[in-house]
Image (cartoon, rainbow over all chains, first blue to last red; front, side):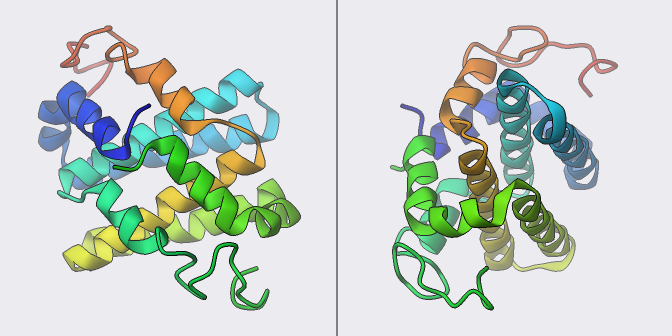
Length: 100
Length: 100
């Protein structure tokens, strides 16, 4: 079991010095490169390749959050723990026009 | 405390029926729209706006993982729990040319 906060802290311990040196804009470029690799894996990758690219995108998302001091776990709990932000329900009952 | 698996399951309970209907390609478009909103928040948003956009990107990443049956927590544990995938160390000791 790995909490979102524990994962963000793991990425901080592993990469924080380099991440802060690189800064937000350079980190965003790396994140986008990994998003591109995820797109490739989604289109034509094996299950293993898909898993690895999801891991990389999540790691770079955590890095970006570290660089700008956002707590990912608090952010998603605030937005999603009480149900869909649009309708407040689990499962979501928003109209398809609002949330397809 | 919210594990990565619990969050992915929360998103599944909230949105799975819509997500599977929409499919991978349509879901990727929504993910990218949220990535664009995150870029805007990173450039000019408040701390609250940044947190909300990180939450949306993480939620759509979890949705994509649900649609293609990837377990995000297992994926990041396999890739990062034992240290940087490049050098195996925490903190990362890769040369800047390999991992800036």
